[in-house]
Image (cartoon, rainbow, N blue to C red; front, side, top):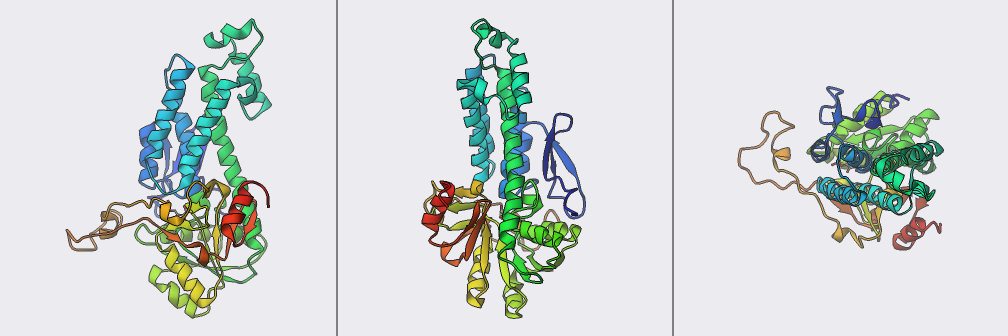
Amino acid sequence: MGIDDICTVSYTEETGLVILDQTKLPNEEVYVRLETKESVWDAIRKLMVRGAPAIGVCAGYGLAVSMERDDSRDTETFRRHVRETAAYLNSSRPTAVNLSWALERLCSRLDRYLQNPSENAGGSAGAAEEMRAEEKTAEGMRNAGAGTFCPDISGAKRVLFDEAEKIRREDEAACRKMGEFGLTLLKPGMGILTHCNAGTLATAKYGTCLSPIYVGQERGYDFRVFADETRPLLQGARLTSWELMKAGVDVTLICDNMANQVMKNGWIDAVVVGCDRMAANGDGANKIGTSGVAVLAKEYGIPFYMFVPTSTIDLETKTGEDIVIEQRDGEEIGSMWYQRPMAPAGVKKYNPAFDVTPSRYITAVVTEKGIIRPPYEENLRKIMEDEL
Ligand code: MRU
């Protein structure tokens, strides 16, 4: 479908962990191999890989890859090193909850494996078989006589990869489902405004809020998409318009300050956006500028849909007030991506990377488990507990 050849984050034993360097788009398609924890941290920090779900997928593999060469001699030391590396990777960016969520998933999976290796060795029968073969390793031998599984470090390294791969597969499936659910909110020929990039480049595949556009494209919906350029790092211009054009979707790029005008012109029937962290009350942090678009949409009576996989819902965070907003270097707004300065040297700058859209502006939240409407506090809890 045009996005099939975009590989945001991938891992195989042969290639290792490879990401598409998004800082180079749309001019160059450069794939980069990440082999150390420092390179993974840097890639996330510099937005070479970005978008909440993709950050989670990359962090999962990044932790597994970083631990591959760890030379701990016992599983307790290995477990400590994994936790330390996870804490380090988690410090790369603060707002997207998928980062800590994915790292915690790997750490907990490792804990379960160490406690009960026979049930937590791998996702497939094959992995479990391999695991049995590994019993011949030094630590594994100790319990061999007793006929029980004994955790060992090579098995522990394998479960990290196994969990990272699970996260990637689940994300792709979740995005596809959000596409199907999201499409039920849209009609053929609609004009749709989006902000930032919550497409295939922000996920394992399909995207969150761009997924219904791709699914609709397969079914001849002929949407007209308006992409906010998304200052200062231009995710809308560089990434959203690039991937939508690749898929043959009708896309028009606008500057952020034109959203009001296209709504006033009557060109927009729905707004779709992604999310970096949704608090328990339904307030959602997303790329800076999202909340302004939500306020405009309300003024014009246009539905505003936030696409939020359950991996992005953080019930531990009570409201949007409690979400940590990343502050980035002011230089990002003072010069255009390593080119000529656009502002006088030394001017004061304020550069929050995200803002919070209060839940009252969100018409519906689309998850991979279904669509939620207010009251969000109650319905988010229910969807997380599989009660809806
Ligand atoms: O700073 P970025 O590019 O990582 O910000 C990305 C966004 O705000 C996306 O809209 C969000 O992560 C949702 S991605 C499916």
